[in-house]
Image 1 (tube, rainbow, N blue to C red):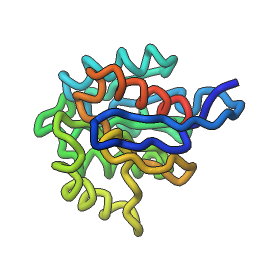
Image 2 (cartoon, rainbow, N blue to C red; image 1 turned 180 degrees about the vertical axis):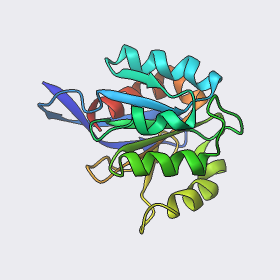
Image 3 (cartoon, helix red, strand yellow; image 1 turned 135 degrees about the vertical axis):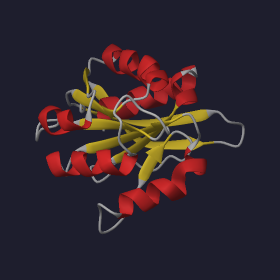
Length: 174
């Protein structure tokens, strides 16, 4: 028996509460491509995903995006950092990702909290979606459902035990 995250609430005390509903299923995200990796984030994110049993592949140049991301790719990580191992902007990488698999789940990562990146991220997403999708994060949780295609991970989320557990549940059930 596994669990699905039905609601995550952020309390004023900065503690986190998970309300879980029992449901049978397999790991929801089995493969992730790091499409615009940043060394600091890859150092924490890749081991975290591998611990969960997720296969992780890394793109090293923009021309490899179309080769690595297929219709069977479950999720893609795009770093919002200024620099990346892939020498292309977030917008350009996201465009290649959407051409390769327009239904892929998007995981955005940054060292900054979502509230500081939200406006710019919404602008970029608006170029690829008629209706800008909800962005789920530990900082700004929403109810997890099959329509949720964006997750935002702040670098500190992977360093904190409580937020790391919340992210584990999201990845396992999303």
